[in-house]
Length: 95
Image: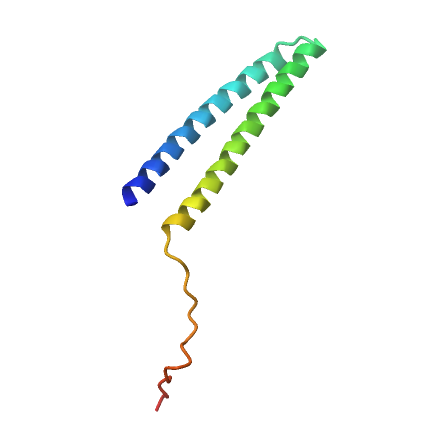
């Protein structure tokens, strides 16, 4: 089970890095479109749209990473047992 979780963790890390790199590249492309628009409203809008889409994609990837992390921890970690004493066993008295 440990190998499976490590493999999934590595795969998620690689994919997150890839999504981050693509997101940065797409943001740079949108910034280039915006800066070279020379006042053309259509191209400026395309550039802004590309930058906002890149930011949304990276944020969505981060949220997905968080969800995967929570699910993996819930599946792998042992269940939480509350520290409630058993009423049938007497508690030692100090003294």
